[in-house]
Image 1 (tube, one colour):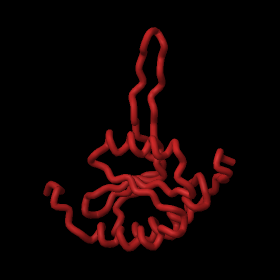
Image 2 (cartoon, helix red, strand yellow):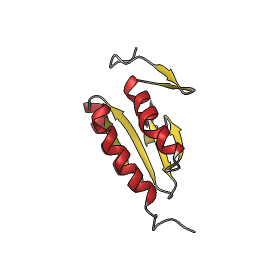
Image 3 (tube, one colour):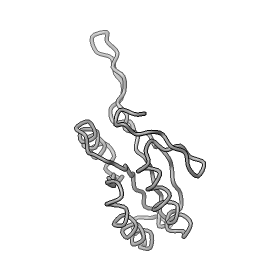
Image 4 (cartoon, helix red, strand yellow):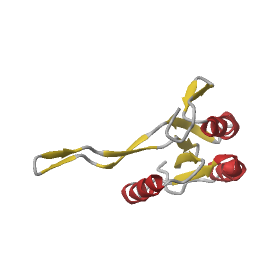
Length: 136
C-alpha cells in the first residue's frame, strides 16, 4: 500500500500504482492505441527536475518526477499523463518545476473517472490532427 492508501494492481501485463491508473489505461489508453490514435505508451516515465549537486561539502540528490504515462500520438505529438485522485502540494511544486524545465512537453492531469471521457474526446481530436511542427 502506498502513502495515499493505493494498492498496486496488475492488469494487461503491467503493474499499476492504483486502480484509477489501471482503469485509465484499460478504458482510455488501450482502446485509443488499438484504434491507432496512440502510437506508443511509456509507463512510469522519469523526468529530472533538478540535477544533483554539491555545496559546502554536502551532496544533494537530484529531484525527479515520475509520471504515470508518456503518450505518443500518431501525429507525432506527446503528452505526459498523471492520473490523480487528489492534487497534493508536493505534486503542485513538481508540476511547476516540470512545466519550467520541459517547456516542449504537455503535462496533463486526469482526475479519476470524472476526467476519462474528456480525455478520450480530446485525445481522438489530437490524434487525428496533423502536427505542423512535425518534420517530414
